[in-house]
Image 1: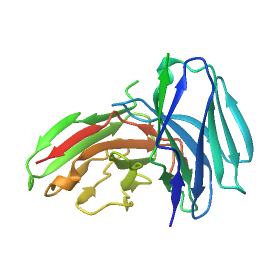
Image 2: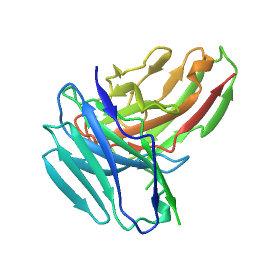
Image 3: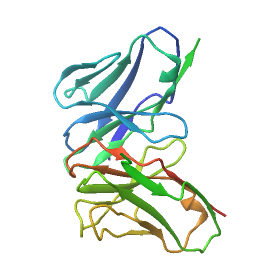
Length: 109
Length: 113
C-alpha cells in the first residue's frame, strides 16, 4: 500500500530552526508537496520538489531524496505565526495526491 | 478574487437526511476535488473531476455523489447521512489533474447526529 509518514507533533522556539521530516512509499512518483494548514483553516501550498536537492523559498526550504523516499521541510527564523500543521503529499503514478497525516508545529516564545 | 467558495461553513444534520455541500471556483481550473479531513488522518479524496462533464471516485467514495455540470461548480451530496460522515470537508481545484498544487476552499464542518 501507499504510505506517507511524518511526526505527529514537534515543538520549537521562536527564532530557531526546525526540520520536519517526511518519508514515503508510493506507487510511482511525480512530485512531493508541502502544505501549511493553520488551525481551523484550509491548507495552502508551500513548496514542490520533483528532482533531488534543495528548493529554497525565503525562510522555508524543502529537500528531496527520491532514492531514499525522503523529504524534509526546513523552517528558519521561526515566528509565532509559523505555528500550524505541515502536510506532506506525494503525487503518485496515477497523478493522485497521497497525503500524510500532518505534523503539528508548536512555537514557543 | 474569491478563489474557491464553499457553503455551508458549518452544518448539524440528523442521520438519514440528505445534504449537499456546494463548491464554486472562479479560477477556471479544470480539475476539482472533494476531500474529508479527520483528526489523525491525512486528507482523504472522496471524488474528483478532471474536467467539466466527468467525475471519478477517490479513496472513500461510498455514501457520496458528485456532479460537474460546468467548470465552476462541483457539489457534493450525501444521500442519507450517517454519523461516520461527521468530518471537515474541503473542496479544492487545480489547473489540471496532473498538478499537485491545489487551491482549497475554507472547508465545511459537518456534524451528523
